[in-house]
Length: 201
Image (cartoon, rainbow, N blue to C red; front, side):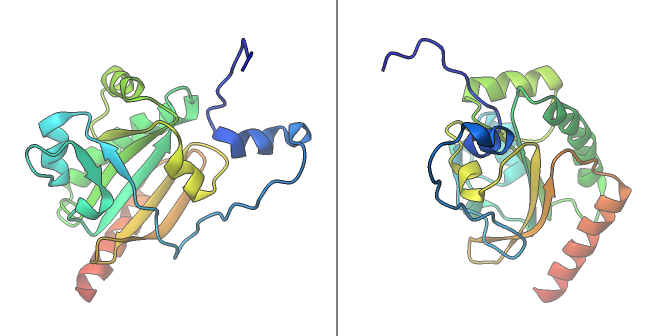
């Protein structure tokens, strides 16, 4: 098309539009921002870390893809990040420590899974990122940003706590926009959610 220099904005079009509204010409169609109570969009992403991820997620031994409907858990904490985002890097380091705390907790272990989704990152980007920062939880690639665009959000980092409905679909229970620290208070929020979910089974 004649373009010699093309730049990728890590937060995607919506983030670019929010940061530089004066550069957007014409009318844009409204995008619904998904919120608590809305269904989380179905997504299917490639498994990048082999048997380790499959075992944690409860996938069949030879599974090459993950769909949220495959997960056998009450809740999933989904981190949306970009490998070029400094806040995302800081959050990832804390989530790795938090993941280990969750796995050692008798209430949360097995009932809450943590995964990361690299927005506009290739599989190779995600593999390098995980190795470089020694990330303990599974990471995946949303190379073309389909999931991010479906959520209608504008910036990263971003995290969702989603709850299984029992029919393969997931409902958004909590949205964390921007950089956040998964501290003891957040841990207790998750525990309370798991206990309530078990009480309704």
